[in-house]
Length: 428
Image (cartoon, rainbow, N blue to C red; front, side, top):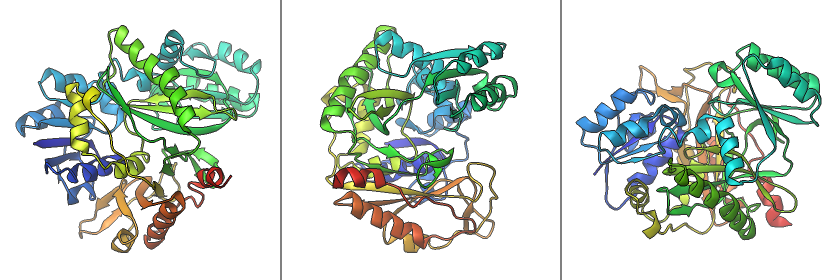
């Protein structure tokens, strides 16, 4: 079988590596891919948002399964296009992908289906004065979210009313996030600890992967601006078996049942971003329509069952007859970012130490490229994800940091506190 993975980041490299472990030995394509995916797949120079090109590629190469990594092509309707062409796909329809593509849609859906989430109101262009009046009377802190896709960076947690008013003006009047910020969801701040639960579903049957915890902010101690994610680990001990049972009963089942009932069944990977309060009560922060990045880099290495069988079950409606086997132990990923991230960064910086890092951990490429001389160089904000495995979280983190310290490039940026919340919970 030929399998096409769409995307070029660390998540897609993790998907390619996982699929390469399948005993069925599929032929792997990655579009457009990166220097890491090229080690186990054939990279094809078709952009992830080129829907026509991707459908043509899958048709011409006789692809039997497409796995869509990033959210942009899913929100644009790639899964629909592939389905129309008779090509099995892992990823939701355009209608269902609105759970990520529009935070206002997701909020409305949660309200209809009785899913716990923060109270909110939505404001659009021309409603800046009303939005400002609303936040002026809102308890602090208050959260402002660009409605559309903003690469994980369209969220402002305002500690003062002045910051909230300025952020609203930036989004609704200043175009801070372009079209994505032309509608803004203003919601109450949720206190607690964040975690993510991943649901693999064909619209009816579903399986859950271990909970993971991402680290969104650029700096140690959760300081600085939000990023696409600076590291992750799994399993996340904040999601106890009791919490997971509540998430399944109060979030997963109502959402899947509600979407199916309304004629837009959700098929693919549903990322449930959660806040767990001190009493263990879960509330939904957001939904995403794909694997998280870097959560994929810690979840996929823990799979011991055949990932190809699992993805085929999603595409062909057989998840209800599928079981997922996960290794004991833990995985941890440390992201190495470029200087200046999440702002602009300088590409083309030589990366060294990749082979030495691989002696300790798995190196997932994200923002990398090949120079004309054939060297691996930086090409984006998040450059590499270094994933360690271990019998314990402590061992997994030690392996990840050992690998991360072997890699060198000018301006290398990383957090040194990945997984510390989990360690504290395990020690308590």
